Image (tube, rainbow, N blue to C red; front, side):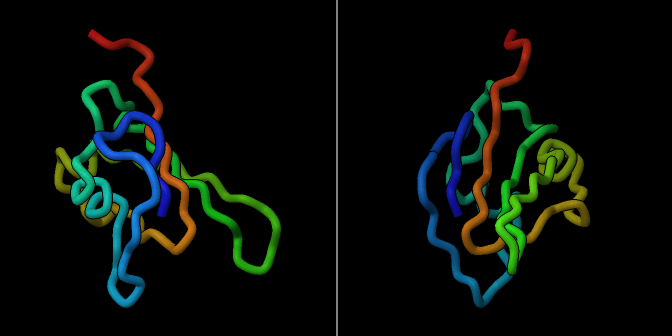
Length: 91
């Protein structure tokens, strides 16, 4: 997994593929989002199996981590690229 953008730790992250690794778990295990991250619009970019196309998923990480909606947490796959952009307005 690759983490980029407004996170406390960015770069390559090794995950154990024998267990379910969700977006929320991986980001929390690596220090979480920075205070300037746009939590409601975290992007996961994934290569579609058997094709050259890329798929972009928008996940509301604030809803998962702050409201406890773990049913909306996304299982990550090997090679996923996770990007947390900056909020448009930072107070």
